[in-house]
Length: 462
Image (cartoon, rainbow, N blue to C red):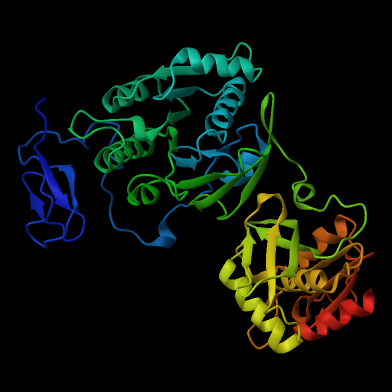
């Protein structure tokens, strides 16, 4: 079959050029022309019309109330933490994109998941474009997956991969990685914007039409974002990011997008000699290892998806020079500067001539404002050199006027703290439970409305 004509389309104005140019001839923008394929006007099948690539047959217009909507059936992967992030397991016809730094453990986790699915009776396929079949076999033996029957295909040509999927029809297929796959219809190199976009589009159509769950492994840029066009994340059903320090044994898998489950859900894994193992109590990773309370440490309860996690916030306040430093790890640096201003204006705690360092223990990243109160209490504790009481937690958003605002799902946060044995909590007044609620026994809860009230209360507890 003859190849379609190659054209170049402008990402800014959509203009078309028959050849690549440095500047778009229509809008005069530089470096915006991307290789694409012109649609053929001949009455023959185009590149989207094969029997397994059409999304669905044409249907009549209907109302939402008349559509028979049923829950998507899920197949557990055998790894509880991965199932949590996916929303309960893999979905028929779903497309998952997982990205992360090199060596973080993406291929290891997926190979373990495929082996578990295969041993449970599912038909699996691992398509490798970066390693040979022998390398995959060596990894499986290192992971202790003796006698694994996972099928492996070492191939990077899209047309051959699609033909294999159509022939063997696996339950789940892993493409490792999408940046190595290329299509004969394009002349650009594998990993280019055009190749990644075109190959992902074909694989997505194949998944929807055949019911095969496809997992795409993606590279990341220096900034940590998924490499390739942004449209890649729009095409797929689920986007997962593998996070963690390669020098640490703990890894986090975070759902950034999920059409079949909760967004921002996380799974926690520990890297062992036998691969990645789920961590049943992830709060233990992020909590203090001190035998006695130390100044500058405060525990908070953060929410990651549906899971409450206890995280230790550490602060160090030290005398600085003429230009004091403000440094935060795992927390927003701009928000730290704002909280220091609120501390000075409304609580009389001045850090203008002090270096302030704030860290979230365990490498976790906290983006929610519910960490404000814990950060401010940790800073005040470090500045005064006085440790917070043993078994103490705090959470709540602090506004510019010094008010302590409620955090979402405060009751769940308090229940998690009570379950792990914490005894004292300072929370926003709106999050305080009713006195008749007996589910927080052993946890003394103090409700506050302003930051100065919280600091005064801490001093009285010392």
